[in-house]
Length: 331
Picture 1: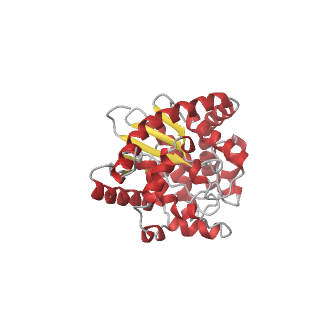
Picture 2 (picture 1 turned 90 degrees about the horizontal axis):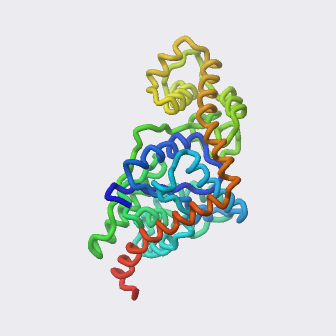
Picture 3 (picture 1 turned 135 degrees about the horizontal axis):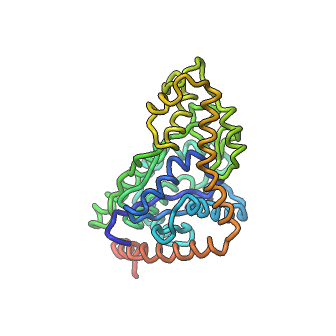
């Protein structure tokens, strides 16, 4: 690693990733690799807060790495690794548990949401995983973390815990800042534009998977919900369906919504939906092809994970040593 600022981010191997994940995260990761030292983790430790099929979890871990690579991440420029292969994450996670207050964890809205979805498995990991998330970031002294609206609470917790530890033991952790990418959109469901696009949605027509074929993608956009009236104008309150499609098109073509509005002035909803569908499908098709090639070469994916884990371990071990020494553990 160099003297560039460090960026850390992680993706759970909990299913296929969506167009929202691509526009909000994966596409931007590739744009950062020349200007920052980037660590991109497959956070499999986080995924077991919900019951997983072991074979499926292993396959999905490969799938996230294959998507990282298919979206243009260079394994020589970035540290690409599997969380469970670097023991420092769990070690620092436990230590930081002891510097995190119950009141802070009680305020985490995602715990409440997931507890409702998985009422038969409200476990300790589900409750404390924001601390593990803090450890993921602080382990590498990451300067910045790319986050969406739903992760702001978690980054704030990481900052609070880091500041608390630093106050007790002296400067130890860098206080991470949020990184808001210049390009990106919060992509909403195609059938219910009032909620975020999610791969765990029960209705498959609500989301576009990065790995879906062109015909399926276009078909889903044809079915996308629109609004009353016929004008293609950006108005989130009165036209949430059309506004969502405009944001998707603007983001994937790097245009402003004003430019999109002008481009499709006088167009019909059906023609606009076809244009969005075709543009998204054409953008994702080479990624899908490369992804499928990579998933046939598990030996290569293993080699990327191995190299990434070695680099991540060498970067994380000095931090574990420093934290343990300050706490009072014999090293």
